[in-house]
Image (tube, rainbow, N blue to C red; front, side):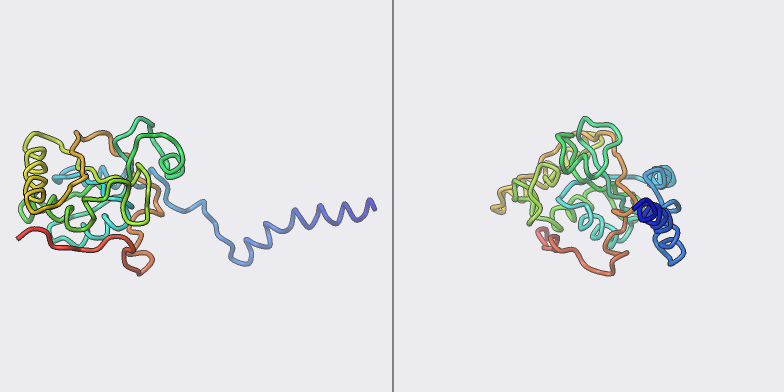
Length: 205
């Protein structure tokens, strides 16, 4: 019996080494949140805008297709918890929503054009989330940096309301933006697939 326990212990010790030799995942070299922070710093010279419209994967995807956009980075904002992670935002009361910070070349595009696109790539009438993603972290929010951005957001909401839309999007001041984990960045580009709950729908002339 004692010999059996010794053999079992040896097997348990050897398993991780065997997995590594066979090509098991070595996550020590995977990018972490600090890499996303460095990416934010790299784009500091560009104009930026922050939007939340459900799962950040789809929002990020469509903004990255827009001419003049330098980068779109998924993250969390609007809440109380510092340096939140996906599990925190999904399962705890952090107050954060999934959002995207969009860096753009102001000589090619502008805030109004990006805000219009925001309303066209998600359902701004849904009140409890976006598509099948239900929860406060998936609410529709425009985070404005100054009075001009606030006025543009409000004007677009008034235009859509006049067209018969019941807009659920809230407009609130920008807060600290916390970049999401590396595996959330460029999600659809990495997977080679398309968004499942975001569809482009023209709403403006």
